[in-house]
Amino acid sequence: MNRIIIHLDLDYFYVQLEELRKPELKGKPIAVCMFSGRTETSGAVATSNYAARELGVRAGMPIAFAKKAAPNAVFLPADREHYETISERVMDIARESADKFEQAGIDECYLDISAKAHGSYPEAKKIAMELKKRIFREEKLTCSIGIGPNKLIAKMASGVKKPDGLTAIAPAEVNGFLRAKRISDLHGIGEKTAEALAQKGIKTIPQLAQAQVSELQEMFGENRGRVIHEKASGVDEGEVEEREKQQFSRIVTLKEDTSSPEKLSPESIKLAEGLCQKAKDRKVSFRTVSIILISNKLETVTRSKTLALPSQAKEEILKTSSELFATFFSENSAFVARRFGLRISNFEEPRKQKSIFEFR
Image (cartoon, rainbow, N blue to C red; front, side, top):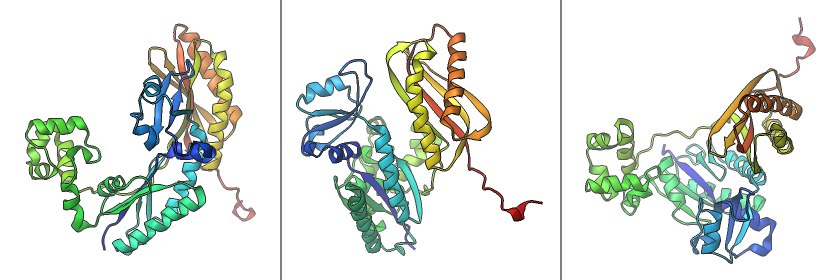
């Protein structure tokens, strides 16, 4: 039976969600940004829609540069909590269509549908179309889907027709599909790797597939050299597997640098509320609470404490984090915090109450 993998990528996800909340923005160039709060232009672009990208606005670009490139674009603050809420709803929809499911990011996932599609690519396309329709019907979001014999080809295929595309690459079509791509188009192979290969005269994917594995291993190391060669041949043995989240965290940028733990209290309440809700949504309790501090010199410090009993309580996070902050700053009075966050981890599932028949 054919192995069939789907890669689902939500189109310019953050911007789509903002357009849904503010329909009057539809059609305008939009950038969703992570504002630091220090000035009107401090921070970076998280994502942009296609209209903004045509003007040169890209993810990771400083907001100040983006505003110069596209002064008439709309710049919005990111609402991560809202995005994560919708993401989880979409992922739940996708999970129902899969034999095996793997979330790869807030806006993308892999589905192994080999059994559901009975190894048939025409049937796989039907499943993908129904999935696209359901996501649009229930969440009003478009997505682009790639279908292939493995995660690599599915991931590359999802980028062929964007937005709202569907591209299927059957096993017999893999070589032809790869011949039309650049080496840097191979997922996980960046421009620097492509440049290093070009210096050795390897400038196309067919040339890379024909290269000696030993030569690639000399250039990039034993494991990476082998993986690069496999990718050029369209080979990817990676399984689609559910990744259990081992921790939840929230980080914010302070409006003013501080060495005072008391200045962290107002934001700590919001962070703790969000983390508790996450734990309740996932039906887990936490045993460990951590603080995260990032200095004005970009040094990162974490401190943790494990609780005597598992909890889902906001008050437990606030009490523990307050103690950790106080202890840290009393011992490190010269530390100046620019950002800080809270984390919960070491999860346990709540124990079910015993029935009367289980007591002895």
